[in-house]
Image (cartoon, rainbow, N blue to C red):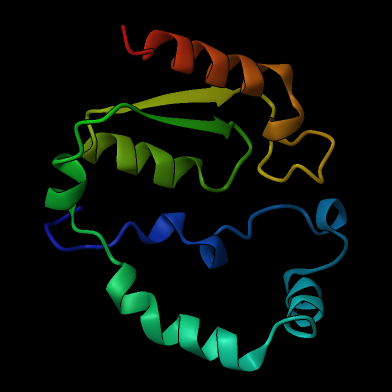
Length: 129
């Protein structure tokens, strides 16, 4: 990743590698259902603001507070999390083997005990004296 590049693989619209059966249809069908529930003016405002949401690699590298990423090995965002880890030394990554992204999926990382355990361990390790 070069300076000034966005971590595009972390964007939700790029995380579409899940199976259609797991999410209730094809990507196009899910997108159509989602668009029916979204305020078009709010979506337009969000789209216009995206350029201001880009964080450079130097800004990411400057983060010194401990950061935790808990991700499933089947999560399409895993590559982006690994990319982020390369730029952010303060990031601890916990990968849950066999877990996906969505809590709606029975294999979803948030439904696994390892998810909560990782958070508990991280918080315990970073308590103020």
